Image (cartoon, rainbow, N blue to C red; front, side, top):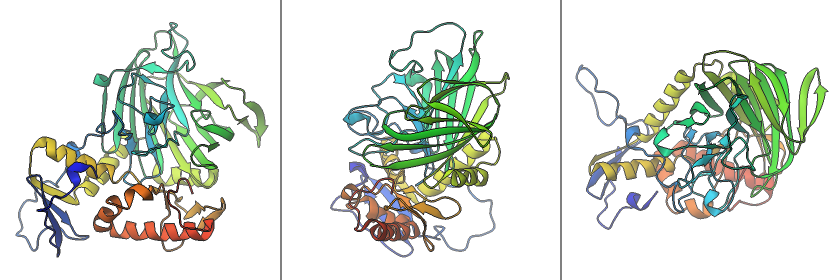
Length: 424
């Protein structure tokens, strides 16, 4: 947590059934697991559930050297779907910096608060194909787009950006293993709506391929090297509208595989022209550390339909439940915002690293099952052992036990306990 989340000398902790902390003029109550905060109650109209999500500002920490991630995710989820504005440099660790005014696209994995960069896998860029010519703000990235922070908003489980040139509204949300996009193309000006699917983005690509299973379903792999020396991200994507045509923008080799078109190489970038239609485009992208079958199973289990608002509601409610585990009284609005944003940041990692069928990938690079616990990744232990993990042992005792079991499994498959583990 940030400095606002540290207790001073006068802090007091009280157990059974809850944990209470007095800090900066606020009374903080962390409900123990299963504690509803009270005993028997009379039959009265229940009060609305406590909802602190409005006190979270995901843009806190995105400027200066904070390196935080402002996009859409689930508490401790596999997917971190958000904008990429900074591709290099120390202050590009999360892929986003508030000083930037150009967005390159929206990728499905991000780190938050780290001191070294990685991730930004499977980038999708909404675009308009044809129509009036425009001058890109970055000649090396022709699909990059200017944006204004006045057109940007975010909260726990969602992110929204209105682009002016071309005129596209981008909305993002997530389930634990799936990123959901909703794009509204309002300024086609004679062009046609499209997407760019970019697997070359940012890190060194060791291997990549994309296969068109049908006009609305795409699967693939991006294997890359950066801080993680051999990271594999498999994905399965479903579009709510069919693709009418495909143009390869990179140097990928196209061939036929099992009757499907397939592009492979280290520079896989495809422009997908969509079929005509006025309805918004919804794209669901499921990830897997294991294989394409795992990604497709994750997609079927967590995003079986194209109702974006339903997924958005689920994400908001899950974050409300997670953040409502700690209730504060008093303090200023700014203090509450600082507190709940810090609490929110503490739940962005570690990240789920297991498919719905229970398979994961070990530090030996092999596929494993971990019966008895859920597997996680992104353990920044040299940072998080001080405060984050002690906090989570209180707020998330069962998940914290899974963290420990994950580290022991990593030791068995990797030969030693990790100090800073990523994508393993």
